[in-house]
Length: 208
Image (cartoon, rainbow, N blue to C red):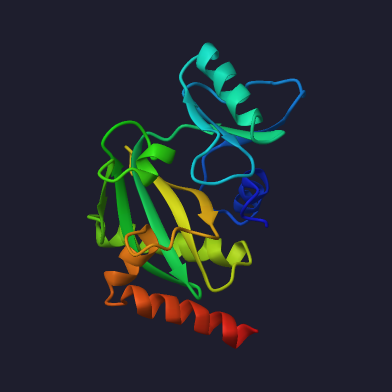
């Protein structure tokens, strides 16, 4: 529930010193201070699969992005746009898996690029220096702990052109088809899809 609310999750990241893009929360009908410079990202506060998410490069695009986001939620998050490389890290029982890099062929990792085959190149393990890999994995584990998560989740990151890392959010119900990101990461350490499903169920049963 905490992770599903993008505004609440961002507040939690701030409190725990987790690097995340600067952003503000806006409620429908509230006066908009527009304190985030262009380009910025506008997101429906609660949702998934990048529905109600858009990049705004100017005032016209910003107003259109807000109108679209408010179709899905009365609360939105407007945050700093990070230009760079996108990554995702699964965490199982508090321990990070190998990092996967996501490179959309066009645009950003929106709904279409997530679900249309061939729309993005996914590389796992990602090609990163060892120290950057370790830092990002430790940050993912910190997000898992700070968000009071259990069993498994997947953290999304951006790395800027100056190689700063930013955690975007925690996905508490990540895709679980054999070709989804989390199963790809598990496969990189020799865990088959069936074994992964069995492991996650076992963790849940042990806690119950």
